[in-house]
Length: 465
Image (cartoon, rainbow, N blue to C red; front, side, top):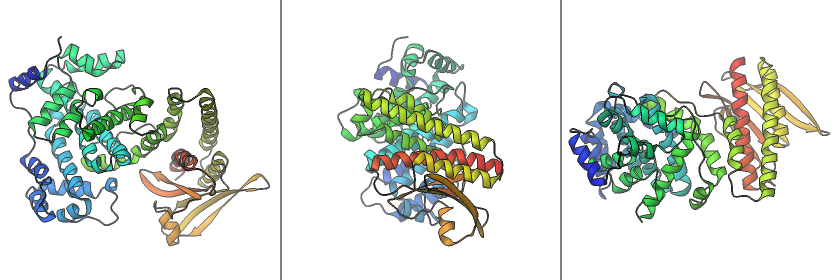
């Protein structure tokens, strides 16, 4: 089928009849937040007119994703503490999610669709926080909306479930979905999504980001829009690679040259990938979407080996990096095997801290597990005459220990921390003392490794508790 021109796409949408429209409250808030003289009281009063929306806004605003120490009890408080941009993205997210319900689906798996959309939104915001912080909320919105054209194709064009063939052909052939859609449907989801954004009168930079997130080179000369488009493109690739796409088979890697153009490194992407698991879970739960599990930290580390082969490094750098990763993976596999054979909590913590000491080449490692508000199980490993010594015991739950076992860590240049999570709740921490001589890059790499160790360890702890 011949690809439709923009004019033909517009004509097609007109022929389809009534397109989904945003609730007036959402469009009004989007417009109002752009005004120079708007204040928190005005925005709060607008949200409060819709009681259902107001309750959901408070629920999402209090989720761990927005990391507020103080609970937000009023809409005005949400506006003041989170800001106009964050409130705007929360309102739009809730409105769009409510607009497209599962009962209207044909071939599209709505749970997977929203899981991917939220994962992409969270990932895009994390990337933007590194390279375009002033547009982090716009990146979140664009990430959330980037695939809405698939819903239009599924519900309004391929009304007999034919869009399932598009998804099937894309997965089997491993080709770009845009080409399959253009050949099979005549129009791709990015173009459909952009036209829908324009119908909703969303800002041009958001519409264009949705329209060009697969084809970054064709975008306008506006630098912010270009960067937003690139951010969503990378976020889409990263989340697909982590198994958070519509396809059951994770898709390929991000082109390292493209990352270089954005001043991003593969280390940045790895770090963001590792942070996604908890962030996605935090916001999905409040939005009422079943949480999708990204690959574990361990799996991310394993896939990083394949990514290394694509990097623009000289042969010696590649050789050293691959050897280092191979050693790390071997050590993690060894630790995992030991943990699988143990069911006692005291033995598990000893395995974790002793292996952590060796893998990180630390001077001392310590795990802290909060058993209740009175007692903390502490296990320490350190070197004596080049031999690993490990000891464990109970300690009173002092404020310092309770803070650390709740994810609140003191600032330190020589010590790194990682939380231990069971059933998505922080129940403890691992800390490693490294010394002050490490470069920032080395320290970051060890911090990522510690988080990998904490995830593997937490799985064993969960079995024992």
